Image 1 (cartoon, rainbow, N blue to C red):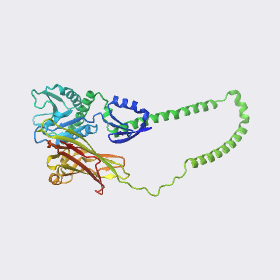
Image 2: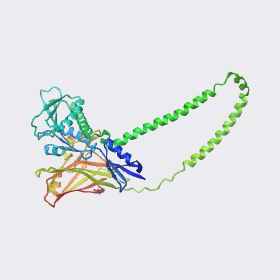
Image 3: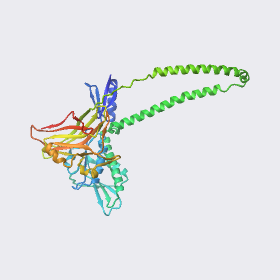
Length: 456
């Protein structure tokens, strides 16, 4: 009997049921989260960092720069692919109390400064010393000099503050290089912190597509090497045999020369007969092994998808502080037709109690605030400039990808890390979030299989 294996909700294949105990130990040793569904005979794997929450804050001042958002947006992308929940925020420092990692990144431009430098503002909080140590180690590899300043009686000791100080007139290209280096090493430092603290292997942080690529490459290399060795061995033996047979002794050479003409003529005749027989047999085998297959006249096109929510709820014991819900809407193409440019509609209730957040941009800010990828701008945007007014009127948030998106059959696209905040409701009331996805010029739509409901 075989069991189904899924990773982060995506089907990976099957494995023998008898291998389940050894597979569980392998996953445990390497840090993967494993859930065995005995009823459906299904294994669900997840990243070792699923359930971990990291909050990234911009500068303390109300006028956070686009540069700070750009750096932290890249860090969010790096860390989100590893399986954890990553929240971007500006002033809501209360989020730091209920998270695993809280980091603030700020930019300061100085007229008198000659070279860039990074300043670590450290508190005396021992709980964050391990995180600071990992961040230090990684950030030192960025090539930007690092300095450290200890702050006593810090108001927010749970937040690690890193400040990039730049000369005032640093050119655009250098700024971009610094931003990429900081984002890469900052994300690596956070992952190293979890690796050391949870005692798990970095392999458990990799997304499914990278794991698949890694193992397929290793197996392919192994198969090629085995085949090469197998091919070289018979060739070497054949060459050795030929060399031995091509070296007659001096005594036999004279006697063999007299019979060579007759033997050659008979051998030539036999070879021709054998070649004819071999060609006839080969033709029969080819016809038998490779019959002509009939091509189906018609294939039914089927458009379908599975849509569902994954989410984490963060709340404080204080009545005055809001609840924070961090969600992801997964869209898996289960049909045989490609789904293009998904538009997400989130319906919320009650409308006046919910605030929408996350890295979703108004259309006016796409050109200046969107994350720049290798193929252009990336991320998600609201469909309309007056999105807030429409949401207050209809209770619907309409969101679309900034770049064209295609979802091939059996592939999944995710609207990641949207944020919904709300205050505690009266007893008997609750918060409800429902989802609908429209694709292919809005000609097809799919409702989410589940909904988010928080009751009080």
